[in-house]
Amino acid sequence: MGSRDRSKKRSDHELKRLVEQAVVEMCDLQDSRLAFHVQSLEVRGRPPSAIKVWAVLHFMSAGSPFCCGEPECHLGLHGAAGREVSAHVRRAMRLEQDVIVDFGGRIGVEYHDGVQFIGRTN
Image 1 (spheres, one colour):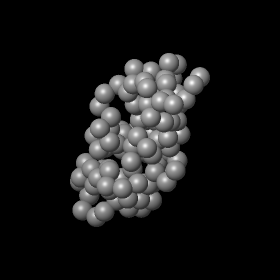
Image 2 (spheres, rainbow, N blue to C red):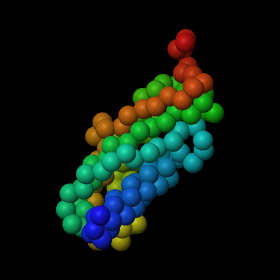
Image 3 (cartoon, rainbow, N blue to C red):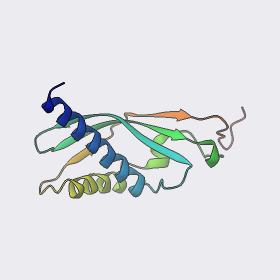
Image 4 (tube, rainbow, N blue to C red):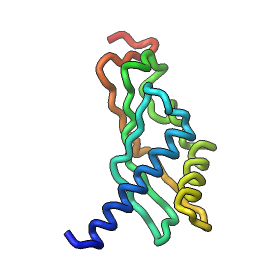
C-alpha cells in the first residue's frame, strides 16, 4: 500500500470520526442508549462540498424501552440537527465554504439483545 493510499485511509477515518462526533453532539446521543457508527462515506469535491453517509444506529438494551425502532425518529437529521451536523463538520475541517452532510435514508439499524419498544409485544 502506497503512502497516498494510507493518507486517504487516514483522512476517510478522520472524516468518519468527525461525522460521528457531530451526530452524537447534535442529536444528544452522549448516553449509552443509542450508538451511531458511520460505515462508509462518499465525498464529492476537494475540499469536500458534499458527503454522503452510510451509517448504523445501534439500539442498546440499556435504553429500553424505546418508542420505536426508526432511526429518523431518534436522530431527527432531516431538520435543524442535520444542518447543524453539516456546520459542525465544516467548522471541524476549517472550511470556508459550506459542506452538505447527506444521510438520505442510508441509516440502518441494529437492535441489541434486550431492546424493547413501547406497545410492541415480543
